[in-house]
Each structure stands twice: as structure tokens, then as C-alpha cells.
Image 1: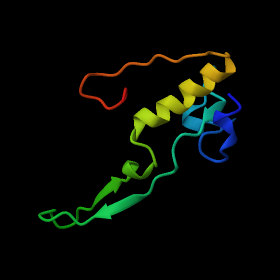
Image 2: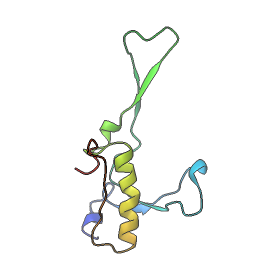
Image 3: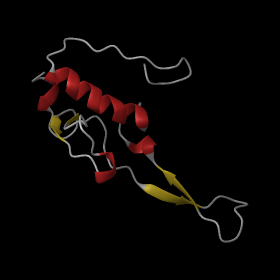
Image 4: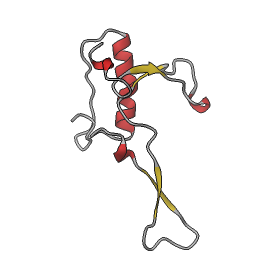
Length: 102
């Protein structure tokens, strides 16, 4: 575990506090930092958008990982828990259309 956690910033395990709406008994308290977060939200000037409407996109393609969005965020918590339990392997699955298991 020490070799993976020595890079600083990304690829390190650190404490995590959930937002109030996600704070429940058993909520994760540690996270293995895999992504550059938070990712920005940009306004998208989409042609044909009706007057008075604005479209925004969350740029999860900027996490710094091939996995983006919910997949990398999920793994941050699963890997921290695996490390806390001294696991020597992690098996995870995703649908065949998903890039979760690359």
C-alpha cells in the first residue's frame, strides 16, 4: 500500500467527510484519491436552445483518469475500504457497455 500512496495528492488515501445530505451511519470516512476533483461545470452554448434556457455540462472528462464520473468516484471509496481491510486484490464488475472494468 505504501508504494501506491506515496505519489502525493492523487493516488493517496485521506479522510473524507460526506456532505450533510449523505451523512448516515456507516458512511465512508476515507477516500483513495484517484481523480482531480471537483471537476468544473461549464455553460454549453447549444444551438437551438429555447430562449430563457441555459444548458450546463459537468466536465467529468477532466478527472485525469480514463474512468470518469461515478465510476472513478465509486472506486475511490471501494479502494480505501479494501486498503483498510488489508485486501490484496479487488474484484469489481460493470456492464459490458461500461468502461468501469477497463
